[in-house]
Image 1 (cartoon, one colour):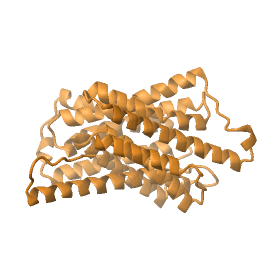
Image 2 (image 1 turned 60 degrees about the horizontal axis):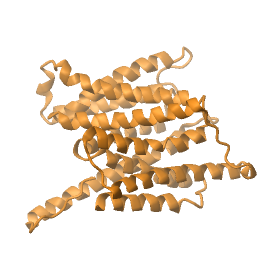
Image 3 (image 1 turned 90 degrees about the horizontal axis):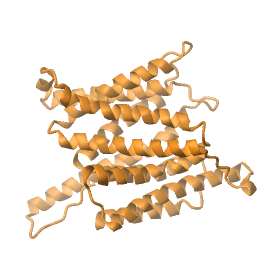
Image 4 (image 1 turned 45 degrees about the vertical axis):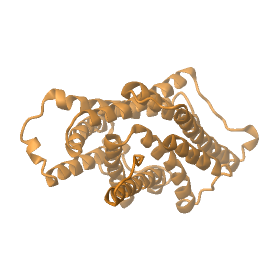
Length: 326
């Protein structure tokens, strides 16, 4: 998110441009929150007899491929196709492989962690990636946050934990096990893995932002390099996970294609945020999407909202005021 402060007297034309820029950023961020928040409910809609009928790794490949093709089309339409005629230098393209490797590592960590903790514990502890991203953002990019801004980041973590734990408590009540309390289980190895996951997640976001901002290249060309590695690495991972009795696109429905289109659009919009905004704005988008997720689950899936739902809403709103005002 970009906050524009007026210095002295501005002309009517300059003021209109400022408001136009704010409106564009507002629309972009709201769209991202809606796409992020709708992801989990859409996944639920694809289930058949309680199971996801498609190969998740193939879906990731299709998302990366869609982002790659859109980036290529954008580069051509903006007159940047001439950059493709000259073989790129390895030192220029190489850095874009790192985010793809980090994200692939995180995907494997998510699967590995399930053996050392219950899913609810993962849901709660994974909110620590908000704090790890903010710390790495400050250390690696040299962005010093003020005390009020650090407090705002803490409020985002608290909002995530509150939302995750209240959802867990509701599921426990519906399961008639409320007297036992939420059954959480985390081993020492699981705690280490979740901390590693949070650090890698933050590092991937911060590193991507650094690369996008440090190179004076068109964003569409940068995305092309980024998603080229994404397709290659996730494609290799998908080939190793696809079994002989299930084809690459088996189980795909119109909802799956909506998910692919939405996640592809969100990835491209996120690159705009990291290029021209900041990684902290990304954290606010992800945190706000939890609330959209809850609302859509209530409207579409008929799930019950928890009595504590207003609390994370308030915490996120307060965090936004603190971070972007001071």
